[in-house]
Image (cartoon, rainbow over all chains, first blue to last red; front, side, top):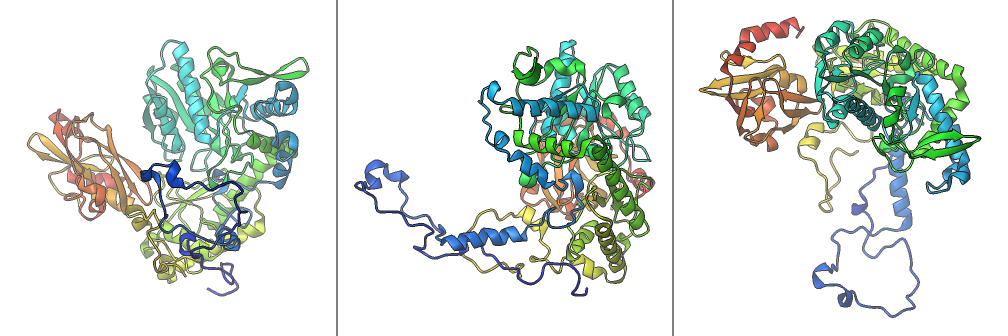
Length: 502
Length: 128
């Protein structure tokens, strides 16, 4: 590879653990002399609780600590730094206006125990956000409480269970297609349901006859991810909903992929009873490092009596919190959910407006299809049809050269790109799932496409180069198997610098 | 790669008859698709299982998969050596990589399973 390609070069520092830095007696602060008499700890604490020395306790100066964390932050790769084909599935670009809006003191300094009369703005925002989300999804009510997508799924299944219980029978099973999100079976199981997997058809979609065969009076619900994890729109969703409703079941839609259909197709219009929104995906709320996200749940009117409390209502010209829902499943989150995340989603919706949201979906889908078309001749495409917001390739063409999905992903780093999702969805062997999102320019997409094509070429001509990638990163390829089998979780003493570090 | 005399499931488990008991593991195909196995979760001895009920989980660097019991029965033995040496599933899937031994409750269920020959044909039909 030539030197002008992007990659980590130049001032890339090696950084030892804090434990391996500093020296005895060094400190980052100086305390004033105590003006009260010193009392020996021995007089206050039992002997067995006394510790004179903490082995290996790091002692460092302020600048050493600052440099340590700043250097490590420079090793990070994020969506603000470069293209990140994990897409909205992980987190898309967060427009900075969202941050500005939630930092307004009326929002950022609001206290959950503030009286309603002094929190009218915050309550109005929640009230309106519920309406906007209902409008986008075609649902009738929205609970803003859940803190994450899977948390929303859980609430959705709790609502279904509560509803069916109120009808006299909670039922036993939930149908989950193999193209659904991995958390769906877990959410069903947590609500006490046995999970039945439905195989998708040859075109990558759930087929009505497969649902009809599995559907009976013991099935509480089906959980469909639409668009599904192959990035395909479930074409038969309305018919599937009809089949499930026909036997008294409920239809849950995992809305994690709403980014592809927002403003174009409304799940509520296709017979969906419940769905969760992933505000930290579709509505550009940040959730790096695992949170906090927000997974509001949209629902049809027949499930409204079971919503978590409180709900925001308008009385006269004022907004109030209603705690009085006798059939509520209870609270699923302290107070009102992750409020700061809600403010960001609100800012996103208001700054784009209805036509802007639709444009997001259109461009996300166009970008994904452009990538798919460009790479189709170079990588195996198991489901060759128009995709939604993401496309799924496999390593089938590279396997004859003993180059696998993992190698391709690692090699991408040498070209300055974060690897896409790999080995998911499970129904595609050696899957490479690429989701560019709407924010990426054609130039960026073309650079990524060029890198992917180059890798496909390398896999044929210099497979070893790909198999041993990455070559330009700070750390060479990690032994993931050893890391999982013999994890080294605790610092065990000052030792030589790891061999793999360069 | 697919020994004669074993019975195979569509989910890529095998069971070997030992009197009224059956020894269960995953096939060569399953381990090769999973890649390096890093963790196995197995049931407790005594657990009753229905045919094709999940009895545990196998995890590789690539994926996590459920394990399905080929027949109805009760768990008599569990291969606890897999806890510290899950790599045995990759290196010797039909030997040291065995997972559980079950007391077979319904011998006629074995008829639902495939012979080595049929399993090979099944893999071929699935495009492997």
